[in-house]
Image (cartoon, rainbow, N blue to C red; front, side):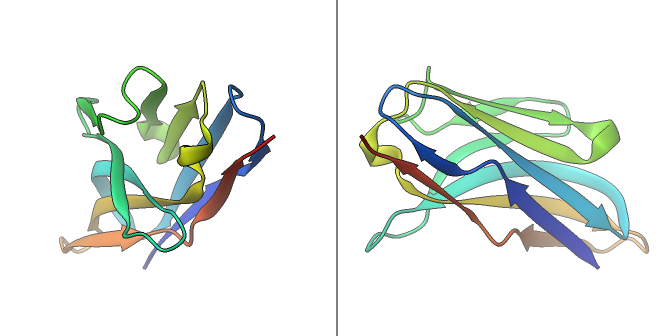
Length: 120
């Protein structure tokens, strides 16, 4: 019904920047809140940032001031600008979205993840 596809991950040196994208497609009526989560090896998935349809945002303390979440409602796409990256930001980053699909059902969707590695 709905697919979320992340892109933009890769290898970057400490202090560098990356921009992740999450594109939603399928039987979408509207997209409500969207968010980014990450999972490092051996750790549980954790919240990174969230943005509502009204563009209200909130962030994990560990990324405040370094990461910026945004969205383009016309393109059903969300972004995560990551600056001043640290080795501890290394993880698989997942896109999440609460979507009202055509027909009225509201469901929670996840992307397949994109790897971000911060290393010198």
